[in-house]
Structure formats: structure tokens, C-alpha cells
Length: 478
Image 1: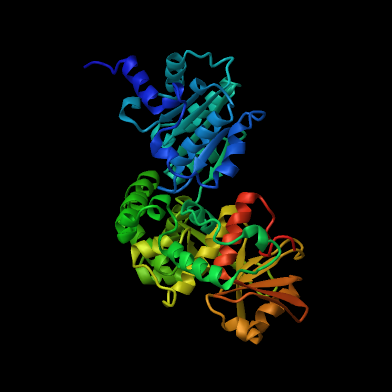
Image 2: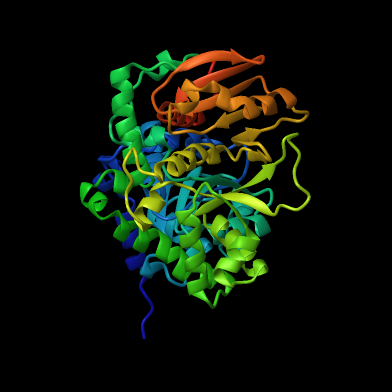
């Protein structure tokens, strides 16, 4: 048997890096699509060369990591950060690279581009890096050895990436989580970013009635199809989102990634648990309930939930009591899908007035906040509850949001009596209550009630995450 010739591998590298020659552009497959706004957050980490750290781009399948890497490369080219032939992209999972270590791939790149890695500044992008054994050890070696090399690595097996980077990358890796699309990004990719004048909205919860009608229509579409760029941009996929999302996102994680990573033998148990949690997104559950329902032991269910979180499919949110204190035993908690469109793909899309829509609206609100890894909780006690609570220490400067897809609480604010009492007791100055159509600010018992349409609230949260603005559950500027 003959080894694959070096020239063949170099030829493959040149195909993957067409910007090495004029006109120094990324392939049309990527350039014809708009970049995710998250590029504005990732790019500064890429060009930060003062600190010697590799950037690890993590996230669930099909959220656009490869596209984002190429859009970052185009920006490097546009800004002339370095010569085009010193920017290298490698899709590590390509068959030609099987058996090649990161060091070997780097050597081949240097040979093909005729550069000196010791002295010349270079940017190297390793895509799907989890396919390389002990990648984290090799990557740390590269960071230590080449001071002029900036490495950006990505992978879809998020559980493996998080596990390995935590073990071996201390002080050498910067983890960057690319989540499913926020509502703001969804509108941007569709070309609807001017649907609402966000600059005008700063400090106000105001939106024109005709704008809100369109915004709510887009919001329902986002709940059903808005998590993944390919779904957003393809009406063909939207006609059958279940096939795309189940086969390319859910099944590959449940049937392949997690079993291979954690040695799961009963895949049916894991699949059944995820389906149950997805159907009950935004609902309170307990290990006891889940165990009785499935006849799977509580320790096993707890492990499965940890695995599903590591793979960025779900997030758990824990409960506090009326005084804002944590429970010694976290018997009850809420589980949210990381994006509401996962539920629509597993079951069926929803309409604005469907019974399940309220839970998906709440899931969407949390999906926006999950981007910031806020230490948020929900509060529940005998007579009341609040969906989203962030309590600063001490309890000053905290905030709270009650998520509704209805104007009922706007019309009858007395129904918020218990929630207002929680805010008074915990020194929270204002309570945001999402609605379907109503905007208004009023005072009750010294607490500022801010009613805002859920669609506009989600839009502003996502916008402010990209803009890097402080947004503590309240309108900007307050």
C-alpha cells in the first residue's frame, strides 16, 4: 500500500484556501450569505494577539460554525490583518487528513505557503477538530511553541470540546459558545433587521402597531423555524423541518455523539428522556417524576440531563423561594430547549393561539438570555411564581421578568400582586411583564411595572448581547 503523497494533501489545502491567490476571496458558498451578527463578538478574540490563547468555537450542530469561520477569514482579508497566504483553513475531518496531527498539518501549510512559522504572524482555523485524537494536547503544544501563531478551532461535538478544553486547556484556550440564532440574528439573516428602529426603541418599549403586527408574525415563525441558519434561509427545509433537525442535529447527538463520548448503552432511554423534556420545555419537573415516568433510576436521569446540557440541547434553571434563597435540595427545576424550534421539529409547528405557544415564548426568552450565561433562576412559592429572576448579591440591582403571551396581566395588573410582593421583599425596583401587544409603564406598590410585547423584548435582548450593552432585564438607558 502507498501513503498519500504530500503533494495531494497540499493540493487539498489549496482548494480549501482559495484566498491564497487573487482575488483573495472566500468561496461563493459562504460569501453570498450574510454573516451572523455573532461575528462582532468572536472577531475581537481572533485578532487579539497580545494574549497567547487559542479560541475554541463550540456549539451544537448546524448553527453555522463553518460559515462563521469563513466570514471571519474574509474580514481578516478585508482589513489586511496579514498576507492572505498566511491565513489557513483546515477541515480536519476530511479523509485526506486522517492520521495527520495538528503539528503535521501546520508543517504542510507552512510548506505549501512557503512561510516561516517561527517568525511570521499566521492565523490557522481548524474546523471539526474533535475528530483528531488528543487534539487538546496537540493544540496546547502549538500555542506554546509558536508565539506568532493564532489558532481558532471549532467542533460540533460540543460535549467533547467542553470536556477536553476544561481538562487540558487551562490558560491556553478561550472557549466561545455559538448558540442557535437569537431573534435579532434571525431577523438580520432574513433581511428584516429594519423592521423595528432599535435606536428609537432605546429607553422606550414603544413600537408602532403596524410594526408590531409584522414583528409578531416573524416571532411565531422564529419559534417554529428560527434556530438554525439553513432552516431560516430555506423554504424547502421549512416544509419539513423535522427531517433536517432530527437527522442532522438531534439524532446525531443522541445516537452517535453522546453514546460514543459517555459509553451510553441504552440509547432508547436517552432518546425517550429528551423527547419528554422537549415536549415539556419551560415546565417544572423533578428527578422523581421523570424516574417514575420512565422507570429509569434518578442517578441515571441526572447523568443524562448533564449530557444533554453539555451537548447544548437543553438548559436547566433552578428554583429559589420567596426570599430569593436557594433550596438545600434542588428537587424541582425547569428544563428549557436551547431553541424553541427544536420542539416544532420534533412534534409540529405552532400557531399564535395554540396552547403550546406560551411555553415556546418562555423558551424563546430564556434562549436569548442563555447567550450571556446569566446566573438566572425562577421563583416559586405557595401563592405565586416569577419566570425569570436574577438576584445580585446582596439583592440590590436584581431584576425579574414574568413571561406571558397574553395581554391579560396588562388588563388586570392586580393578578401580579404576589410577583410585586416578591420584588418588594427582594429590593427589585422593577418587574418586566411580557405581553402579546401592549406597551406601558406604570407603578404599583413602589415597583415599576414595565409591560412589553414578548417579541420586542426578545429582539432587544439579542440586540444588546451583540452590541455589548448592559441589559438587566430592563430597557436600555434606564
